[in-house]
Length: 344
Image 1 (cartoon, rainbow, N blue to C red):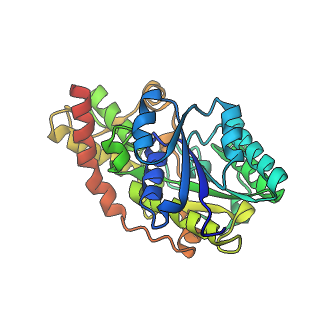
Image 2: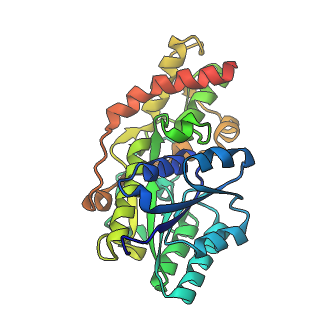
Image 3: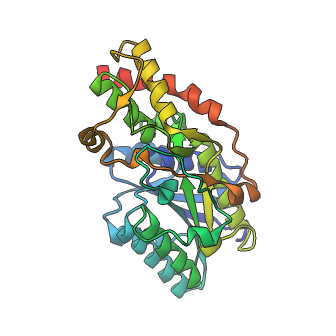
């Protein structure tokens, strides 16, 4: 890409935890002045604050398929950071990128968000699995059935790269933790909270006792929110340099992890901390009932194993700085913030 030309970037999901962190990282990128960034937001009231950051904000959502196609068609790079299971939205973005290729011959870049939930099993918290996926082991990833979370969309994205009109890179974050602290959060644009850990905290506050899924023996990888944002930028930088700089398409899977935890240990620490701040009647977590799993988490997914190694991500130069120690340190501030919100 010519250095004198603007790089046209389109981002979905910028008011969310991941998308807002990605936009913030792009705004502080050394080459930020050469970016022309367009973002989609569902909230008309967020247009002015987004514009104040120097981006073009358009009101719309993943349901506005024609808008997704239109803005993808104008873009050198698309970051899809909204719903990772929305097949129609993914198809609409790919259609726009195909139209751009048909009209100009240019091969755009799509950096799509999936998740290590694609690796999840049905352990229900009762055991840890020995099966560990590396993002370099494509044959193993390709054994995942279409019925796995995110998988159907991932297959569609890889197939588009195979057709040659787009280069696709799929980011698969694991359990993301930490309260986002970006310029977008300060402006009230971005949700600063993750999903998994806050949902465990909210459930504990609601039932007045920390909870655990089954025996809590299942394992998940984890990653700090600022590290996951830096992974998107590492992939972006490599992709912009050229097609040979980082695997794409079939070889374009990038796990976001820098450590692993026993999910039951998070339940135990949350239970202790809730008791400490007098939001629970006991320091011990009790097992969530089937009804509670449905009520608080929409099913038993928190009891699954998802074991991943970010070998490809680190091979292209990603250097996460937060280890699993940061995960444990993040739990108390997270509880304090959620308790404060719920007391308002």
